[in-house]
Every structure is written in structure tokens, then in C-alpha cells.
Image (tube, rainbow, N blue to C red; front, side):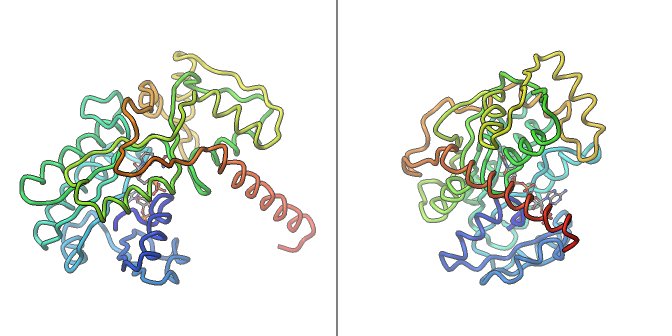
Length: 310
Ligand SMILES: NC(=O)c1ccc[n+]([C@@H]2O[C@H](COP(=O)([O-])OP(=O)(O)OC[C@H]3O[C@@H](n4cnc5c(N)ncnc54)[C@H](OP(=O)(O)O)[C@@H]3O)[C@@H](O)[C@H]2O)c1
């Protein structure tokens, strides 16, 4: 598995080992993810996954490859192409060279070679490329989720951090729509795909049960945290200015490319694919649990620090 150490990957690896699968995780930094070393059935290997020879070496003997590796922001121009296009191409070649029959590929909702952002275009190109290999016998399924939520997500946890910084919160692209889907439901789709051959060759848009605007999601986060915040929705021009500034902040919390991605609503046009069943987790039943738990934990560590016990 590539990208298996991230937010979605960890959840999926957990499901796989529960089903008795043996998982080989390739990572750029084994030490950073050392907690995964003790997971039963998980073999973690530090390797440069952009080196085709590495893929050839470690795909040998695998029945299925799962590629979750991706980035939301480029560190350097060209990174999107390297991770979202060049890497899937090498993955396909290594699969075919070593008789790996099955490839599960993670794309993103609205990924399209004609997408508005570089992120969406590169994801679209990578997705097209892996499905192109179907003609040569590779059994490919790809998943195109809207934003994914869950205990270690990059979405609500980030909103919660922003809420703690100031009483007034400007929200870029306030009217942009999302259909957040629970990480456990996404992992379930992967698990079904591993077992059901009807998923071969398919590309699945994955959305949660309800659509929300960005403004609604921010207001909901403040409500869950019990914080009184003035949430100010920004229109397109102000959002663009904010992106131009924030992409120079450490960690690039919001970039012009993110802004362009958000110009297309991240919601599904069709029903949830019936093959995965009908159950989808409502964010209202999960988000309060982990946001408040995280809040309690950070308060606890704050008390320890102020008592000099750290
Ligand atoms: N989270 C969402 O809301 C969301 C929504 C739609 C689609 N997706 C897609 O779902 C997949 C997983 O997302 P996630 O949220 O789990 O992401 P994540 O937590 O950021 O994890 C991404 C993984 O990709 C690997 N990676 C990142 N940059 C890399 C690079 N330059 N070279 C090689 N490997 C790199 C990392 O592995 P190592 O650090 O171990 O090398 C990391 O574990 C991605 O394909 C993403 O596009 C996510």
C-alpha cells in the first residue's frame, strides 16, 4: 500500500488487518509512523516510492496494490504531477510487470483533466491513466470522495484550530458546498471492492448523506466546541485575496489552488453506489465525539504543562 500511513490509510489498514490481510506499507519515513510497527500483520518499509525499482521490488508477491498517496498542496511546482500522475503510471507498470492483478486507486471528487485547479487536473490525469491499464488486464477500481471526516481528519480538526485563534473567523468560499463522508464508510467501500468483482473497472463518487456549505460547516464546528464566534463568509474576490496571502503562511493553510478547487461544489450528482449498501454515517453523530475529546486532551496537557509535569 502507498500512502497507507495517512489519515485514510491508517483507517483502512486497521480494517484490512482485522480481516486477516497482510499489509505491506511503503513510507518515506518509518520513524514518523513507528506506532504502526506494532500493528499485527503490518510490514512497514521505508523506501522512495518514486523510484520505479522500489515498486518493482516490493510489489513482487502482492495480490493487490492500494494507492492512497497524494498531497493537497505542492511544496514545489511540479509536485502534483510527480505524486498524482507519474507515481500512478509507475504503479501500473510495476503491477503489470509483477503479475499484480488488482489495483485500488484513490482519486477525488471532481478530479478531471479539465478541472479548475492543478490539484483536480493532476488527480484526473492519474485516474484516467490507471483506468487506461484496464485494457491490459489490470483490474482497477477508483474512488472519488468528497471531503472525508473522522478522528484525525484534516478538515474539522483544522477548523477547530482556526476557531481557537480568534473570535472573528473569516471563511473563504463560504458558499462552496461539500458532502463530507466518514472515513469508516470510505474504508468500507475499499473492503467491498476487494471482495466484489462487480467493482472492477468502476469509478465511484463517494459522498456523505447531506450537503453543507463551508459557512454551515464552520458554524457547526463552533457550535460543537461551544465557542461563540463571529463567522464571516467571504465572497470570491476576498477569498482569492485571502488565498494569495495564506499560501505564504507556514504549512500553506489555504492556497490559490485550493480556492480554485473550491469553485466546483464537492457534492455528488448521483445516488450513493448501491453496491456499498445504504448506510452512511452522519457527521453529527461522530464529529462532536472526536472534536471534544481532542479539546479535553489538549486542556489536560495544558494543565500538566502549567503544573510543570511535562
Ligand atoms: N482527506 C480527504 O478529505 C480526502 C478527500 C478526497 C480524496 N482524498 C484522497 O485520499 C487519499 C488519502 O488522503 P489522506 O487524507 O489520508 O492524506 P494524508 O493523510 O495526507 O496521507 C497521504 C499519504 O500520502 C503519502 N505522501 C504524501 N506526499 C507524498 C509524496 N510527496 N511522495 C510520496 N508519498 C507521499 C504520505 O505517506 P508517507 O508520509 O508515509 O510517505 C501520506 O501518508 C489521497 O489520495 C487524497 O487525495 C482525501
